[in-house]
Length: 276
Ligand SMILES: [Zn+2]
Image 1 (cartoon, helix red, strand yellow):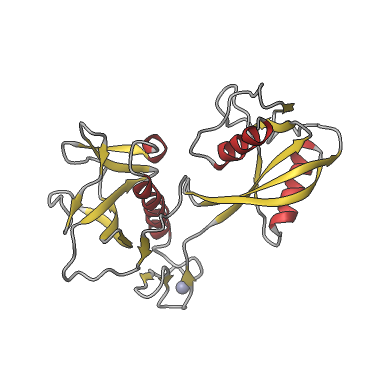
Image 2: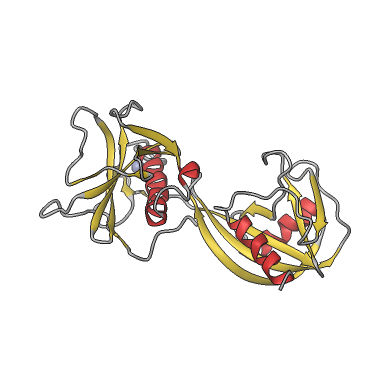
């Protein structure tokens, strides 16, 4: 699960004095710099930037994890020092320590945000990073730019012993998942969910219940998962966002999304309940 670990204390400006050796989260797009070892995968640990010959484009203090400072860095180029490689964050899931994966997700999002807000969106002047909060400030017009979060509602719909799973064009062949969609400006989570269900599969649902949430830093989503019961309507897919959908029994599920996803958790929870 991608989330900040409980042992993490965010900080926008870490003190340089008496700094413990820190973890360096060097990111490039959705990739993270790692060292492949006999035992698995590691991150660079050092009190200062450990690669003197490798120029930095930007560096952001993240906070403290289990007593160690954490830094996010975008290097000036994607040619890592020997012995280190960039790997996609998704491919590191279960290979890199779970707490580090959570902080790496934040590093990806903050580097992306910082890079995209170097200039004011209102007046075009160069912005400055603030030390006292996670924001960039425009000294010319005063506009503040905060890291962007895009809420996505996700819903597991069940009807008696079956679950509704649907196939979107972007999915790998054979993979079906629960429904999901972005919340639009002005909507509540509930409104977004009812709208998505009606648009994508032509159904009405009832008994919405909150399930859990998950950070999804590809590039800046917050997944908010619900469960619901089928209420009425005839299943009909929109043919655009959803290509196919059907009701599945727990013993006859199609291909499923990645185990690191909230969708997978929702589906596994259904299977566990129905096979008790
Ligand atoms: Zn401005």
